[in-house]
Image (cartoon, rainbow, N blue to C red; front, top):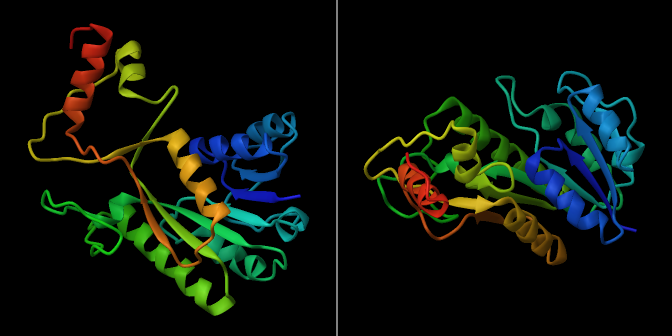
Length: 233
């Protein structure tokens, strides 16, 4: 049986876990609150709390994982999973795939030019710089410990409950016009599909931009959502 261990169980990880559990995978996860942990256990997901400050109380789930998803964002003190559990990941005997969820924000301002996985990482924001450092740490660990690391740089994520249409329904959509400020997006179901494709054909050390091919201004997205709903902005 394949076993996915998710460090962090947010929106994207939850969709991936749902897809894989339907195929018979065992799912383990970490969350930040006891309440969410209890809710996941009710869904037959092995879960424990990880706050990024102290190590996991139990490592049995991690030690038996065949696949590991890293979706805990780095903080001011660095990547908490790397800082606390990198050595433990290196000791997993049956691990054949590790995925790290990053962001296309690592590219920074490209001046309107299209970017690909070979483009320079020009971000100047604290959040973007933390992501760049985390990526580099995991890629170095990949070489040092022979960890099958895969980097996924996600664009703006949307899906059920998280879209311009949902924002309009709630009355909190904002149409901010920034001429020439284009960015791509990605549906959460497509994220899960891309990660599953990587799991099926691992390429340790690979980096993937996970995004659509229709970059647009944020204001245009909101405008189109209003058009679909026949709503006024």
